[in-house]
Amino acid sequence: MHDNLLPVIITRKWQLAESYHAVELQTRSRSELPSFDDGACVTLVHDNVICKERIYPLCGSTSRPRAYVIAVRQDDGGTETEAADISLSQGDEAFIVTPRSPTVILDDRTRSILFAGGVGAASIAGIANRLALAGQKFELHNFARSPERAVFREELDALKSEGGVHHHFGLNADRLEQTTSHAMSPAQANTQIYCSGPPAFMDLIERQARAWVYPANIHKIVLGDRKNS
Image (cartoon, rainbow, N blue to C red; front, side):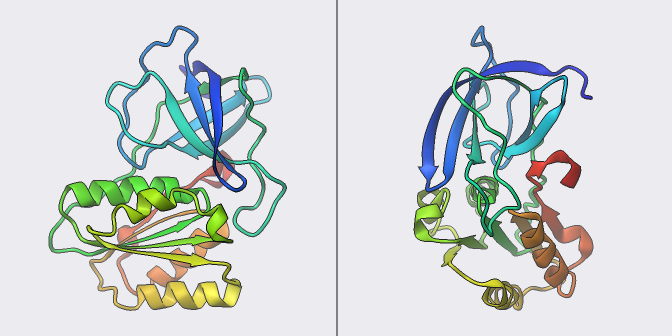
């Protein structure tokens, strides 16, 4: 159980991509919410008694937000995530924990490679934006089952002038492993690796990255059930 849970209500919901939605959260009084950085995540407790909780990526960035927008998946399975998110509908009440902002290494001497799968693209888009604003070069690989299911594709494409952005659609397990391995192969020991997506996807990235970079340079942005974080 968390201390100092902040009660919120779901005020809006709209589609981001096939099977993915944006969900807006506000307090009943429309009071300001804690600030966060690009790429941050927030833990949402859907039932304070049963304590159903999941970690969601926050979309966008603002210093004095009156609403949070989270990216969620709501369908009945598939290869991108282990399970669909808990049901979130307009008018539902929930609780949130203060957002967690990922560490982003800003160093002109290092290179960054970013990997996104499914809804993890929301977090990776935020990290890429922070790198771009700092003038840091990066390479980004986004994976989805199809173009229609690619979350934040336009936001990622908008960063192409700052770094290499590559989309990969419909890859089976073997092709996925080959593609991520090829993307990793130019890495040096001080390269920074960022990844967010389904647990099996991040485990693959971490396993491959350990052959190239220092373990401390592997940054996993964990989403979904808190027990997996």
